[in-house]
Length: 89
Image (cartoon, rainbow, N blue to C red; front, top):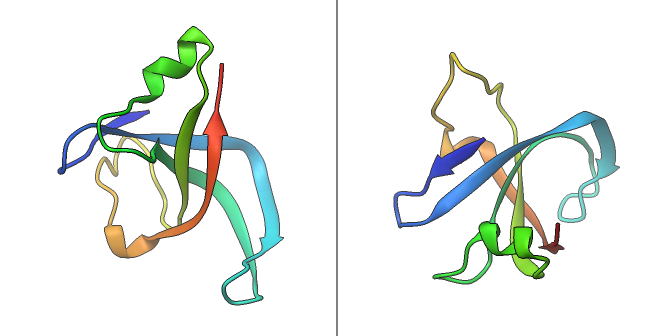
């Protein structure tokens, strides 16, 4: 799901096919990844470039709240940045 960013551009909310449990590097505690927020790492970039086969550097955050059509807004205090990566279609 594409979501507007108040600072311009877009975030993408991605729901994984199944929950992924892992150890959070910052705390050493277990946590579960289900809904991720993905956005281009660099200002002015966009994820649509990945559809043309380009690699797009992204930031990844774990969304720690329920999301869905009834909850269209994400509380920023419930979003935890955890990694950078590359998206390529």
